[in-house]
Image (cartoon, rainbow over all chains, first blue to last red; front, side, top):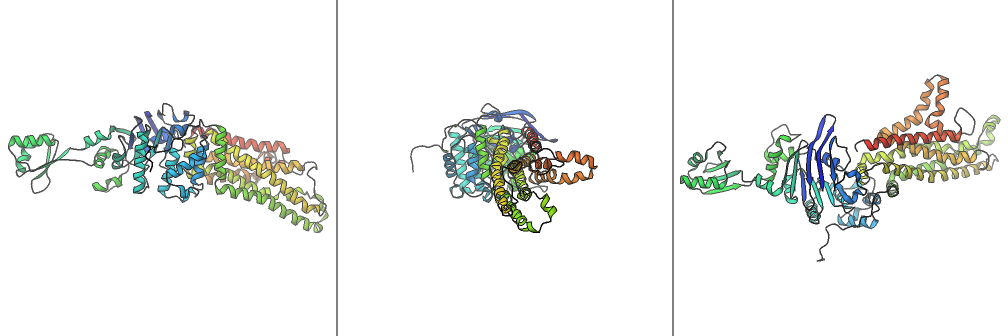
Length: 313
Length: 273
């Protein structure tokens, strides 16, 4: 369980986290979403006590992180920034962390095997690829068998097999009743892993919602309807909050502001035949971008095409 | 494949809380598991013994050709401690690195999430690094003494360990090197940056003393004995001169190291990581 109460953080006169309150519950994977620069990593640093909040506070399992006598047994964290001495081997890195809590060496070996670093455990961590570094970070997060996991962009640098592995791992950890809090700037990634999402932009909470509701809200806003009498249908559907746009020359209309059943009923009442009626599923990525578009910190100057926008944020 | 449902991550009985003793062990693992440690200690031990042997061999060889006045003022301990001058540089720089490398690599974030009270990490580093330096450098200065004096014995100009002041100088050199290392560690912990830490260490130890010469002589004479280098080197003094008494001087250098570590610990608790 992670709780943030009116959490704020200023760096100079720049407010990185702004009055953020949320609760992350055990037993589900909670996604922490926001464009790059929206304050996700800062929030995680505040939760872990690496930075002191300018206002408010964050607690993990009921206590501030710093007050835990054995923090690695409570919280396992993977930070976005690399947190390993490049000259030390993976084994010695984990051993040094384990020793602070009296965790035995056998546990270090166990986790090295779990994350698949057995063959490189004695190599200097500076020689690791990004993906191997992520695996080492995940091993250190799981070292103390914590009830809460906080992972900042864990899929960064992983190959498809690794991404698949971590999705299953996160879902499995949540199914065991642990609190799993995972940040990402990719909604599509979260929709496959998370049950709940907390979305922030410019350090402020935008929404705190189940993925199911998010999908429901994001979908069905655009309805495609095809009719041989498209022009007349357009007139029938017209209303103050309704926009109708011809999507092609063969009678396809794109309608927003009405649901598919409303359009079907209106067409039937007017005696207009419909050849197609589809509530379009907006992609989660689009919904996420709509939600955060005003809160994007860094944006390419040229208007980006829709598909490329994720790369631009 | 096992059909028994297992946990996705193996479980672990919780082993209790973070203690200072456990952090000592962790810091020992950290210290011994990077190359810079091995190299710096190798250099420090090698120079302390090697340069002493070399210097003493040269002096012993040259002895018959030295003038009477040179022979009269000769102190057999001086060439014997020549290597300490180089060893102190290696150990001071390693002291800086022990903490600044954690910042430059990001390891500090892992260290501070494992030990969020933070201070045990700094104490752990200071105690482990101090003890390891003592454990290596006191024997090294003793070996350097035995080796160096064996060259002088052939000329019958050697001193015995039991002669007045000799044990103080020889063992004191090892104690001095540990203090220098801790001073470097304290400065590194304040500055948190390798280049800056080394510059501060070298500046305070080696650049400040000659700079004092711009002061009026009476001021210089009054202040110089209290500078870190000159205070610490008093423990190795073989002549009476403008320096503090040996143990007071060494204590002052340990005081500087302690002050640097005290400032560092105040900052460590307050600053963001």
